[in-house]
Image (cartoon, rainbow, N blue to C red):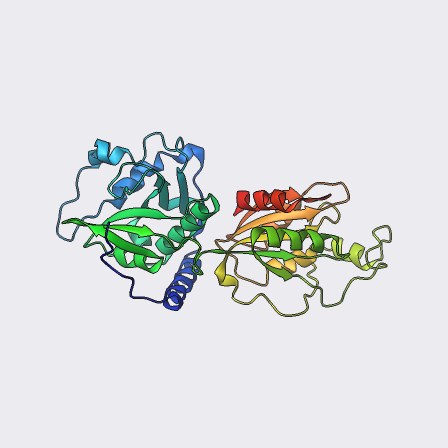
Length: 348
């Protein structure tokens, strides 16, 4: 295939557009998450919504999606190696979806490249949600080992510009459609991961640093404004600083140093901390409440003297409204770089 259309935007311009779309999406309080197994029927609905209907043209009947050339987008979804789907959810309602398959569809280029499909309800278009869905899926494909993706789009569809902004270029065309390919799935515009950690004694810091290195993620220390002493950490003393803090769930210890710069660039946060009294230290709540984390995926990693996560998730959810918080792993003992990399890829 020959290259026909060259992107006319720089990486800096695309990054500006992407950050703008994140701000728009944050204003709507939309959550991005993976499709659940019991939701695959939604793909039929969004496939119909994805059909481009020019102004003044009567929409086709819904039965059109039963045609073989369209049914390939949803039949037996989940059975293929590149069957991935991310949905946009607003107040419990799924309002959009992006999904991929290796299939003989309009955008097929070879048997190793996933094809894209994306759709949003009309009232949710133009708010940056589509851009963020595309970026999240491109990042997911990258972590799964794919280095390019394709799609077909009708020439009159306004979405052509969005696809260009996230790195797609036109490699072929016919009378009605462009065939577009993204080969920049490791570019600077991709979603990023942050490892944020609190470590009173240094143990969690060692693990967090190794996790960040394995995940090729940025790292940030949640450093208390006043460092903890050994006496502060004496859990047997009811009057010690840590005991007093943990007996006050509403307390929010102050964080020192600089805040995370440009938190908007991160889609996934690996949050690392020691388990205190079967929950996260309240300084972790301080960290979460310092930012707008709506729509981000937050994965919890902890070190512990023997206990599990306990009520950690319950205690942190209210501090990050609209974020998807998930229990990751208790990281006690020694972990190799390959083990941590595999663990990070599972959650990114």
